[in-house]
Image (cartoon, rainbow, N blue to C red; front, side, top):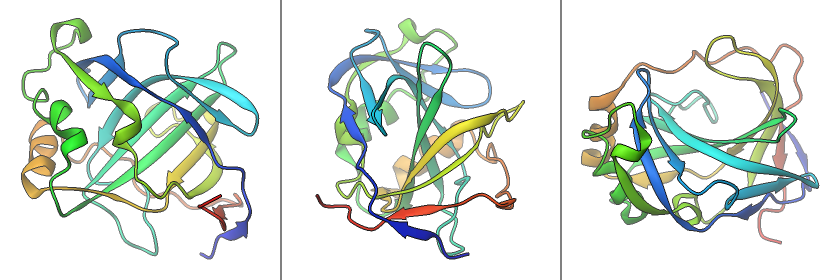
Length: 194
């Protein structure tokens, strides 16, 4: 599958350092900002407040047929229920200092976000090259409802083998199989640096 290439308007990330609650919801580990309304993205002129991030192992998306050991989903939702997800793929490589505070809390996380807190600078958790692959799709967890604006970062971030192992020790095989396109248009941003 070759995506359509287009000059897309870059996502504007209004992320900042914030206290985060780390919790285990029974099928993945999540982090959410404990101060509501401080973080958001602007996508195609619409502001989506940031709700939470969570992980899947292995990745739910593949690039050129390659799956990755982890994929992180940054979930955003408007008051009227519009959802935009930013997917960040993770490959093994150098340790990732920005993710270290989150990784350090994974094993201790329980079901209550306020029980396990850390400071996260949400903006540093993303790749430097923020070109995206975009399509309209569905949620990847039951009931897989449609209407989600997917934005998968084309450039993965790295984490060390030990960091990845900490994620997969908590959960692995919690990803939906790669789905057929079913007529969806997939668009790659042609100009990541504007």
